Image 1: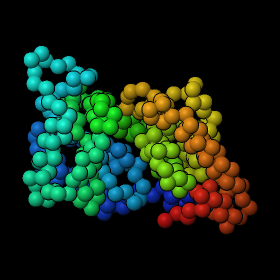
Image 2: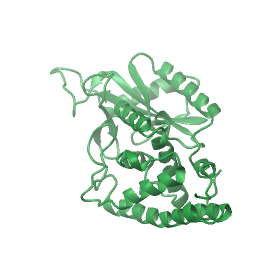
Image 3: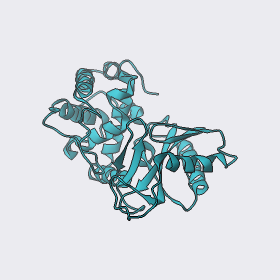
Length: 293
């Protein structure tokens, strides 16, 4: 029997406190009300998917303009007025600036409008493809100068279903891997949060366990064995593989695999240690010397 306490391991995967979640919910509702009936608003990202770590400080809110259809992906009625993405962003920005709670507290980013209100809210302007109430929606990158499809509702449902199939172990393990990635590298480009969710969603259900160390080892071994060229990793909600030269490219994924392979050696030491102290020490080494908060 392993000497490594499961509660010690799972401290790395702690979700946000109830007070933090309550604050985020309140801010989300306030922003939703401020935007008004012209938008279908929905949450996405780690907060919505219950994969945020304990120190969560941001919330992603998609704001779908109910009257604007995508030129790139949707069926545009001939003669309809075209609305630029600059104007789509500006409409939300004007609404925020006119609200005394949010005036001067926002700034435009590449794909979102970042609102700083204690907990940061990233408002992602979007337009619809089929209708505002269904996926996909279209979002825009000013840096790339192009629209891209996004499936926030489907992503949530896919994660919730995998969580049900694994008795909750999937989301817990996602948080554990996010904590590990943050411990071993400050460069989020090596494995952004969204990519980790996609990656673990592609791992077979039988690799997951509510024993944190067992899940980390089983999932980690699976990922380390993958061949980048032969093993696409699809987005859970829909769309193509994240393994592309413009998203998670081969060198970045290879570096992730190398770091994970190194960590798995310490994880195995922790699972086989003869006493609890040695087990804890080995596990901390797997997390680059970082103890749980």
